[in-house]
Amino acid sequence: MKIKSLAIASLLAFLLFANPAAAQDNWSYQRCLDYALTHNLTLQQSVLQKRLQELTLKQNRLSQLPTINAGANAGYRFGRSIDPTTNTFVTQTLFNSGLSMDLNADLFGWFSKQNTIQASKYQVYAANFQLEKARNDMGVNVANAFLQILLAEEQVKISKAQVDLSIAQLDNTKKLVAAGSVPESNQADLEAQLARDSSALVTAENNAVIRVLTMKALLNLDFAVPFKTELPENVESVSLLNLSETDPEMVFSAALANQPGYKADEALVKAANRSLASARGAMFPRLSIGGSAGTNYANSNYQQYGPSIPYVDTTGFVTVNGTTYPALKAGSFRLSKLTPFGEQFSNNFGQNIGITLNIPILNAWQLRGNVERAKIDMQDKQLTLNINRQKLRQDIYTAHADAVGALQKYQAAITTERASQKAYDFATKRFNVGLMNTVEYVTTQTNLFRAQIDRVSALYDYIFKIKLLEFYRDQRITL
Image (cartoon, rainbow, N blue to C red; front, side, top):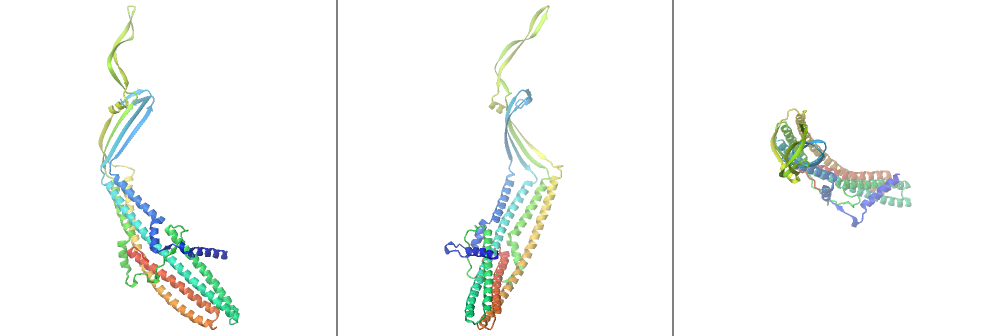
């Protein structure tokens, strides 16, 4: 299983680092950052949150306009019902329809809506700062991932050089063994060393593959896209802060002026304060104006027309002295017809307008509860601001201490590498003349290899720690 895993890792490393020149696609730090700013999924979520806050602000602003609603209805009534056109009872199947329009507008509401609008404005400000913070954080994450790739590639180069050196030493030792100058145990020791160096190379190559995959995930880049880092001309000459002239308190003051996360917290505190004012305003009376207009139609509405037509009708019979006479009643009537649809709508058209004063008295403590919740939310936002301010100062002091420690570690690694190189050079001369056994020589070689890896790791760790401190001061990272 171990051999199979090494083979898979070697294949991945080959696919990543052994691309033909035509398939290579060089990525500098700036290109990685620009691509991440437009394709990273987390940043896209932040953009959506910003748009949502802007939509909420637009809706709150439009809430100041009057509300106008129109409606239409049609239906049948059965049995005894009220004719909506005559307001009289009828007992028949009645078809009726109508149109209506209502208008309402607030005249005075103790600035509740205005404070809600102001709260939404500050929330939009906070969303903008949070998006800027997310972009700045993306710059830090991309810089870290980029440096990790560079470190992994440097480790691959050192491991390859170590393997090449072990191969050369093994070839030379084989010749000496064949000539009888050294024992076969020397060859066996170097073969074991070559195996260890080869394993370290496979591990380094696999680590480089993983670092590239991490960067691609950060960029939201297809894993099949070729990716080769564009190395700076000289990593060790990258412009860095002078730690001896950098005071963490000065960096903290600069961060308070430039840090979008801190500005977002301030905006949220102001938004919470406005929300509290809005909740308080809702507890006072509200004056509003309203009006409506409407009309109706019913199929029971008839109108008379034409001249009056006289008639005589027998209402009964009476008997006088044994003689029966009809009882007659004279009257008149006019012809009638169903009132036309348009005429009914015109005749029944009515309007009203009025002013309403709504006085909250008892509403299950809802308005008072809203005020209390708004107070707690404002206190929570203020505590969040203070906590993040304290954490920012702590992070800056920690970053400064880490940068100082990384510099000292890097300087110590340089000294260790130089001493290891000198020891290895002397060991090589002694080994070649037979004054040092293979075990001691391999140990010296391994010490040099570790010193080289430690120096490169310390270098990139130092660069990142310094760049992080620069980020707190300037809100940007350059490589």
